[in-house]
Length: 308
Picture 1 (tube, helix red, strand yellow):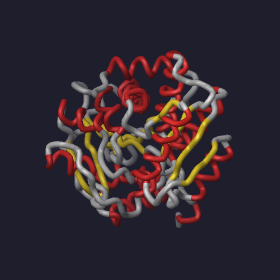
Picture 2 (spheres, helix red, strand yellow):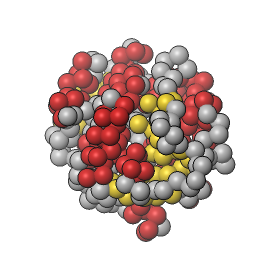
Picture 3 (cartoon, helix red, strand yellow):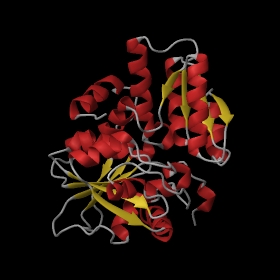
Picture 4 (tube, one colour):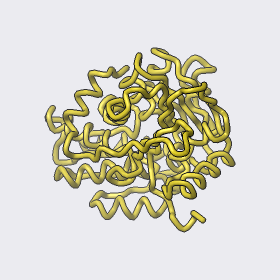
């Protein structure tokens, strides 16, 4: 299972007018780093792109019926699918683990979706959502490992290179890997991709070491948004097609990057979204002289009270 740039371009046409084209901030103080401000997307997260692409494709194919769409999510995919379902007049059901942040759960409900709690981590909510889809006939939307979802996320890469064709490298955070898979498909042969993961949730890193996706322990401050137990097949296929630079960062580095985004840019990012920048600030990835780097700030669904 793979996706191509053609899939991304199809998604870009399909979701045009439904999502925000988020800004690409030019480097500050000559540091050579652009910021793709995807935290300004509808719902405060990049996943809105994939949600619209999945649901619109399902409408086109006749897959959607009265039971609507169902998704399992630690929070952000649920927000995005609920938002898109409301916009398209579709019934939405979201399964979340008991540990899902209440701020996200309440927003999902405000978008009109039925929220159901299942288990203590994403994998358990996922099993419950799959069972619901089979029993009720709902169309299943995967949080990250589905072609339409990943291709929607890949439109971010298209926008980055349209706005700044000279970008050499795009740095992304990886959990389940939908964002990485989509951007890798979009920019393959045109820009390098650096995949940054928390040390405590190294899904892609572990898969590359093992030669196939494997389960990892899920913990740490970014677990609410990057807390997949294993990397998706689409992400692993993307890594096989063109190996990314894969680096790991500590929780301390993620927290420091989140503080940096707030102090220097007044960007209130969630920890998962700060993970990509942590790869640079911690020197886990060191650009070469003159390398033009774009970092995707992929989400802002956080408690602002935790920012100093």
